[in-house]
Length: 83
Image (cartoon, rainbow, N blue to C red; front, side):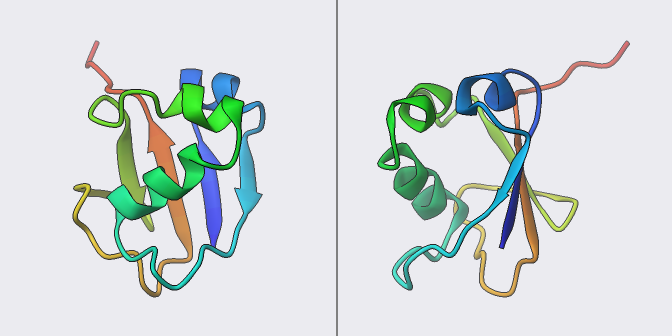
């Protein structure tokens, strides 16, 4: 699956996107964030407060308990405000 990072999440991870194949036990957005945090210091820093980072599965906002099975793209971004 393709992961896309925006704003300061991208800056902290150090790349705009990547293709990953998480293990079978990674079933939800929260599981994915936990798995990513274990991939290195940059990920641990980007997801140090998982409650702040938002996710979208195939361009639809998703909650942490959303299933990721079958997703082709998951995006991570900080909260946004209108303007």
